[in-house]
Image (cartoon, rainbow, N blue to C red):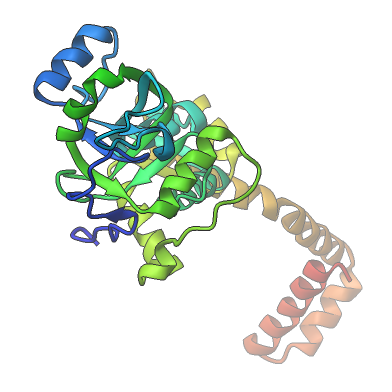
Amino acid sequence: MTDVTIPPYIYEDRTTEPSLLQGDILKVDGQFRDYFDEFYPAIKPSDGKIQYVMILTQSCDLVKAEKRKPKLSHINVCLVRRLDSLIKRLISDDIKPLEVGNKKVLARDALDQLKDKLSKLLNNTDQKTHFFLPKQSPFKEDMVAVLPLSFSFRTDHYDLLIENRVLGIKPEFQAKVGHIIGQLYSRIGTPDLHDFGWNDKTTRQYINLLLDHSNLQQVPDKSYIQYIKENVNDGVADVDGLIEEYEALKISKSLQPLMKNIKTHLIRLFEDSEKIHSLLASATDKKTLSKEIKQLLDDAITGD
């Protein structure tokens, strides 16, 4: 899976389009970067310099012809960031795993929730705050548009913005972006990865690949996390060893009622001399004796 990339299923060729459209991806470069740094100097993404933005303004308001200017005075754009940076934030802020050394320990249900969220994001069916942009030149990796983080530029810069356009998205995905922005309740039907040859198994494998370098350590439930937390020494611990140790303790604890029952049956047996004589008398050899003792243990296990 290391060389697998998601199909660029949302894009269309926009080289001959004379107008900006909702969902257009712009490279923040040259004079456009100068304007961005001048107007929004405080914006410093944690994953490095701003490289790309996406147009949020509706396409109908952006149409430009020889005798027609755009209807509005400003054009809104949002930041486009690396998918990897979003995954790191989801893990640290939403999942909040227990960090021990270089490992992040989390319960199985928490990991399942994270994978489900990423699956919806990859298919652009999570209509809340992010829009997934699969790897496509000039992107060097999968990206996401952060829709709530928007900025505006005067339409005086229209030609400059269109010069910096590097990608465009299909009309149905433009509609989905508009749907998310407008916080509408109706669902916009769009193709997803299933329509491009990716089944659930392939998507799960890709999600596992995305999480491969996050150092996540899955445990069956939160009681494991509590045990590890109680036995960490100055933030350092053998996580795998503690997991094995706790599993052994759980097994030992689960066997206690059974062992107590067996012990009770054996005590009763050896307190009754008649039963002992009867057992020895019926056991003509070691094999028969073992069989009789096994029956006693079976009775103890079943509670008879």
